[in-house]
Length: 246
Image (cartoon, rainbow, N blue to C red; front, side, top):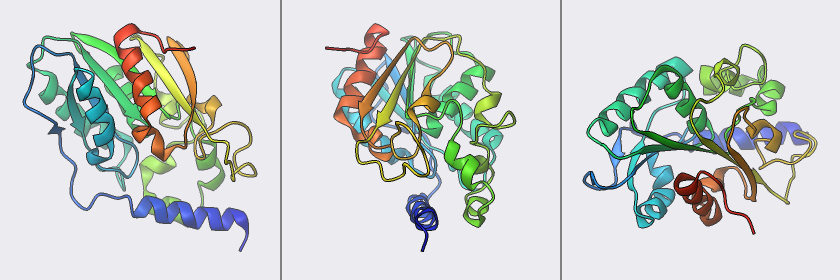
């Protein structure tokens, strides 16, 4: 079996077995603490809001009130997903007077950008995008016509780098945003994704016009949401508007 074919099958298995078996709904970690800044978390493609539980705990320990927003992504369009998360974000943040920050992993970051493009939060704080393909995914370009991309549905197919893609439809941010990219030294996909990347998303793809700060951390794509260093940098940006460096 060719390496590219084997990689495709492995990716499909990983994604399919990551699909939530129940519909994801808004899942606040604790009773609302109106005296704390709020952080809204959005997970990535084919995940459940429980996927952000470790990051949620670290944010909670740092003194934030955390809300995890969940959504289904298989066989849904970006517009359908944005509609789903918009209601959840509106509901969870309506009673808060403290700043509301948003943190998204992978597709979750694009959804945050789409939400803020169509909606405003009066007390909006800062935004952190983790491993988000802001310029689109080169792998989607490469595998767009594979049968398993049709199985994954319209949102997966919309994540390419072309001018009609979901990432290309999003405007530059009007809010403070920090971007965290991942980089792995154990890159077995060099023949598929040349250059620095986290195994799925290139470092270059995560960059965003108008971003306030940018940092590359040693981590694979999926594990960025659980990485302690990623959490620490996200917390630092939310508090200070900049990432920390030696």
